[in-house]
Amino acid sequence: MQFKRISSIIRYLSWADPFYKWKISRGECPLCGKSYFISLKNNPFLTRCLTCKANITNLALIPVIKAHVNNDYSKHVYELSSYGSTLDFLKRHFKNLVFSEYFPGKKFGETVNGILNEDVQHLTFNNNSFDMVTSNQVFEHVPDDRKGYAECYRVLRKGGAYIFAVPLYDIEKTVQIASVINDEVVFSGEPEYHDSRLGGAKSAPVFYRHSLNDICDRVKLAGFINVTLKEIMLVPSQGTPQMVVYAVKE
Ligand SMILES: [Zn+2]
Image (tube, rainbow, N blue to C red; front, side, top):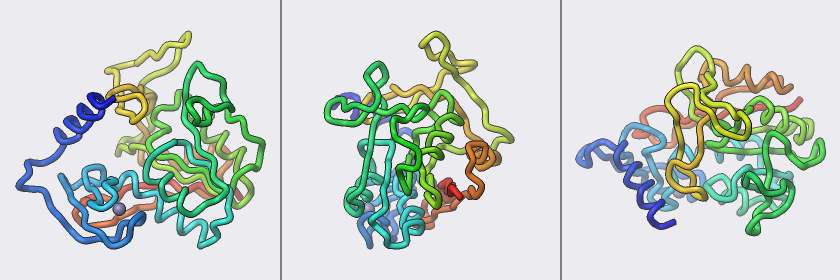
């Protein structure tokens, strides 16, 4: 596990600018308040809060969550990961919180190593169970992302929101680059994997390259009417905004 973590860090640093170009700037971290951020490059993923160590890609959902709940922390929330900045924030504020991981091959709706196991394409929750569903860097790994959005819609109550981020590319349309055929992941081109904290370096196959230009329409197919992209800038040195999808069930 330690080796996997170290190799992830080495790969992370390989994307950075040379160290003399790194920048430190003051900013407001949505998780820990006034803080300093380090930018290893003009990029949200390579810009981190020096207090909580989270990068801006991971912190970006929090401002959108705060705006949506508007200080009503009695809401029922479901987060699709068992770690990360979003969950850290949710755990501090929401009493009615459910979170899960995806453990393929294990029974869904039950716990595995103490963590609830869910497949977002077939959630085990009843209709209208939550006021908010959140995920970050999950949906590029879901074999049928539209089925997943539809499940998030189903388990949300009216007025509830699905708030999430995925890698978004400035391409015309979302492209599916892998499918599951006979229980095996088959890539249509160059295989692509992401690191995951539970599985380790390059353990999570990427099924989609999502387009900045059609992601909202793709989510609307699930039934959401009001879907917008929020541009999150925490410090200027992050260079470009981190996009967060905000989909409300009306
Ligand atoms: Zn922080």
